[in-house]
Length: 377
Image (cartoon, rainbow, N blue to C red; front, side, top):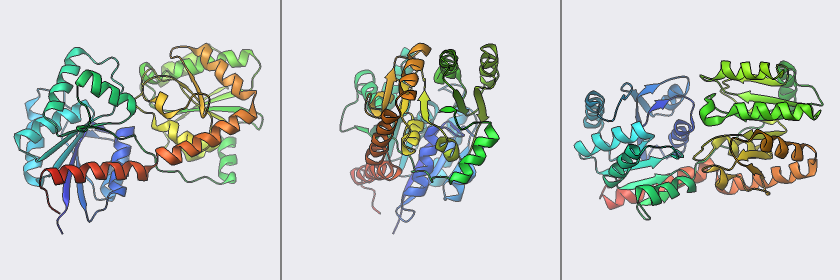
């Protein structure tokens, strides 16, 4: 039996959510039914090797400096001619550009593009390009209801060409109590500390870890024994460390850096917080929910569709450290509410945001498009 050949086109493969989802597809899609490869602009860290171990070859072609950089398209065209994919699945703006342009030039039967961001600040030129790319695509996947709203209202694509497929997360293994206690000791977390956790790339214009640090300063003024545990690395780490020092929080903010396995860190948190300026979905929110953590997050983008305000956590306005502090303080003072939110979040994650649900929905998109295009397997 022949396989449906899928070529994913992305920007950087590092540790971000989009490439993590491709890893779910590498693991979850039947290897007898599908063959998958990835073209990307650059491949960093350990994830490319993990993808290759699952049989998904990773082929970097170099950074795409503009949508009109001919040499990058030529590289992708050569790969397409050798691989002969039935379907191209492009995600992230650079990956969409590479996939649509090279795919149409080489007459790949099926083209899928995926809106994975919360494009609130996308320029009119970017919106115009997205409309152009969507017009040359057979399917447009939106990674959340928020992304779906953008595709409907700005890109002007509607169902059935538009399909909303919520992101999914592999349910994590729970670390042992001994592992958790050892990690607490390593991080200097004491038994009475109330641990607020957050995970993400330290790019403050996007994730606004600075607002969380300022919220912690307010909580410390109220004599609440909080520790902020930040998992991740990035260009703004030094500035964030300087802010914590300026506010006298050197012992209250822990920068744990990038961690390949975040499960032990989630397991020692009392509450998860995300102060993003924009967010298409927020995979880390689902990871926190799998650990039965109550969530405090900003009511932006796809977060509003993941966290149910007053049911699984609290949503506050963005750019408001005081609101973050008040929501966290409310949950600190109410252990029963934290427990109820955590239980409800776990049930919601299991019902709507599992890896299995995500992979099966993408599989159906591929099979429906293959049938439409007369691709037989």
